[in-house]
Length: 222
Image 1 (cartoon, rainbow, N blue to C red):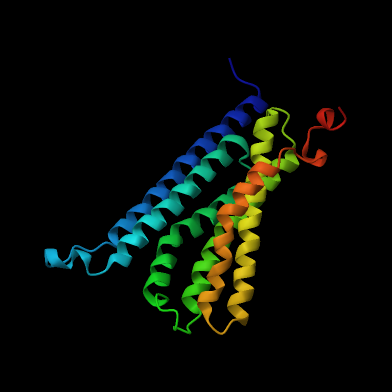
Image 2 (spheres, one colour):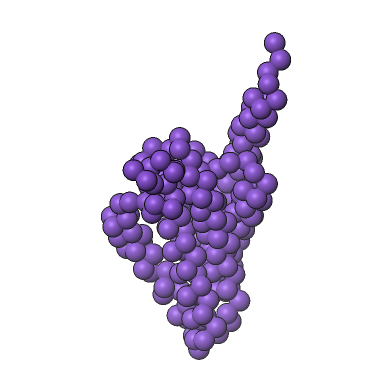
């Protein structure tokens, strides 16, 4: 028996969503693989400890990419719909996620000394964060605007908090960019990142309700 067109369209959309999520996982895996390839095998065993910054680079970037994978998983589980705009935003997010190990490698290699006045490594590193936070915040914001009635109150709150979290990261990168443009010493532009962890923890504790404009019509008037 043939299924109605609406049902076939919905199944096709869900199938594409699963394929896109699988493709996204491949991009994350390649980003981590690229990071691992940066750790060159030394010619002598004694040289393993010559450059400890390389190990710091590996673990910091690994943690960042894993954080983004978790955020991406939550976005697909709660907020993503396979509309053209959302698909485009997802690809933009993946592009900046894929380049994040490279920009961090450049930052560590060329900006390791505070006397270095070259702003480009700092700018690339800050831009990679902005490039991931902007499309992710837009994806969560679009999900809030859809006011999906199938979400539970807790899930809707998780989506709202995720939007605020990424919007705050984006605002922090903007502050870093302003400091970078104005400061004599480029390393000062990295200091605003120090508030991210505590600020996000406070945001999670303080934000307990979703604004009425993001609630389904029945819930908004209840």
